Image (cartoon, rainbow, N blue to C red):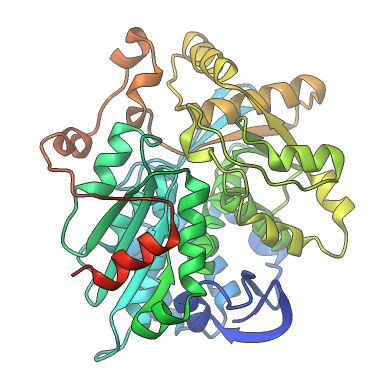
Amino acid sequence: MKLYSTNNTLSEVSFKDAVFNSMPQDKGLYMPISIPRLSDDFISNLDKYTLPEIAFEVAKSLLGDAMPADDLKALIDDAINFDAPVVKLDDNVHVLELFHGPSLAFKDFGARFMSRVMSYFLEDGEKQLDVLVATSGDTGGAVALGFLGVSNTRVTILYPKGKVSGVQEQQLTTNGQNIRALEVDGTFDDCQALVKQAFTDAELNEKFRLTSANSINIARLVPQTFYYFNAYAQLLRQGVKKVIFSVPSGNFGNIGAGLLAWKMGLPVEKFIAATNANDTVPEFLKTGVYQPKPSVATLSNAMDVGNPSNWVRIADLFKADMEELKSLVIGFKYNDEETVKAINWVFDTYGYVVCPHTAIAWQALTDYQQDHPATDTAGVFLSTAHPCKFPDVFSDEITAKIDVPAQVKELASKTKLAIAISKDFEDFKGYLLNAK
């Protein structure tokens, strides 16, 4: 697998180099030089494969000779060892549950795969790998658990003070060992900017071997394609061949992976980019003007991103025909009041509990289907996190119905380990240079 920077199509690096370097020095993002199209026979027979089998075939096609097939298969079997079921709620309304991994969020797919890829490529005697990650909520916990105890690696997680849920904060600040947490007095965009600036700082790059665990890293994007193919496989078993996906969107890595799967041959009729008040992309899809803006805090905190990093990848995928992108992807946005109303409606109608991000995806799917009825097309909205991570959002009646996993209950007894810093880069840089 060879990759180029979105800011320099003439550049060429290996998958290993892209994983460890995360972001090119020209501040672009890495993209595959060629995107393979899976065979029609494989796509039409997806229902005959398990999730790990699908993941292996997709990864093998994308990564090529980046690692031996047997090693890749073993890596995937270890990383993707949990389910991602499609649950039918109504005619043509399904939910893809992506919260069955150890951190109870869809980020487990990317974090577990990436940590194992990095561990695989790390050689004895090499310089310690310093992994930097900004989180708006769920990424931090997934990365912490994905890398916890991995030898010769150290993870530094930056999260915005007061803007993640209590459970999310516990997941990323109570680990210790090789996991460090920084509580930034700012927004997620500020955290993300600090990480990006670190990668272009000469002094930091001379002293440390820096890489990122954010979705700017191509190793995060690849495994997120797996669950789109697997969802389609489950629909095929039900006799459904047409699908639209409604994706709760913040930094746009999730829907970016879906669009990559589409480029590889997955027959998706439409993607719905569902956002909260941070509506940079829906506005672009309506007006044709891409205008990043400061992020605002909402109940769906993991989507509080005003300048989504992965948009440059999506734009790159469709650079030859932006009109094709606009015909394939439609955007919807919702405020907090509409989010709570959607949570209550889903519970009252189906007896099903959705987190705030998932509620937005359901509402977008519902609104789209009302305007575009199609009895032969399954609508699938992605559930990106377990509702227990957002207890303050729900009514007492709904809260009583949430089954809180044991690992979450255990977090309450653990000590918070976090260092407070400002959003000033020199503060962050000083911490990295001087921390033990």
